[in-house]
Length: 307
Image (cartoon, rainbow, N blue to C red; front, side):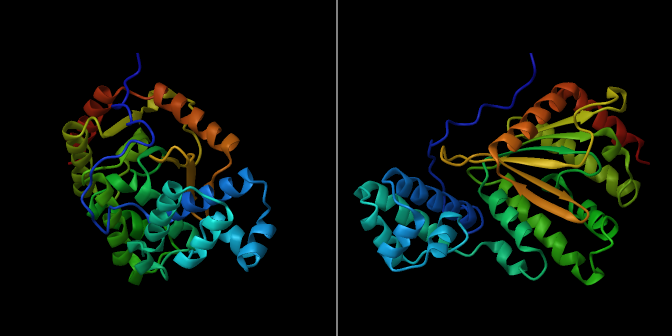
């Protein structure tokens, strides 16, 4: 039987958490759920976006922007929509809580001039995800990188990055890793090609420290972090091609998303049929990869070779 991570708590399950501006939800995810719930209610009562806009005294494009999670909604405007959609008090309270959360400023907005909007949006999704499944052929997942490894990747992995931007990009990558801790840490299952472990990014010393970091994570947090290696001996396998990540969320209303990033192309895939293809491919690749224990042994072996 294939090894599995500890089951994710049922969607909708709540936990007590300490308020933390870096980890308490994500305004991007909360705006997404707010818009989704408003659209679902509008459709339930048989009202078009144009009709809803007319009733609220706003244009259809504004209604559509809110429903897409891309336009922030003031309290007064939400109250109007709640009245128009005849929502129950409990639902109205939940929507207001989502609106307040969506109005917060994400830490990644401090780097708005450094990254394209789509990547900033991905950071928002990542900050609010409950689980990530990923395939990586050339590099180790960003959430698992040491600072020196990240610096070497950013310096040498993209000719479009200016030298003056390197340290700020490293800071962003390290800030993202706060999701690995806290009271409700993100869970990560990743398949990494053996070649990514042997590529001496930053030199042998940096790579050895990086591999030892993976060993520490795997041994200290086995229920949270799963790393499987696709060995050279696997031959042709489903993990061929560009890297991608599948993001899952705790809310039962939010579907999985896929994030892809290559040299000159980034994309968020949200169409269920396409997302399912990625999910199936990841599952097949995970089955072909080494077990967690065998992967751990191989990572230790390669680390010892980094002299």
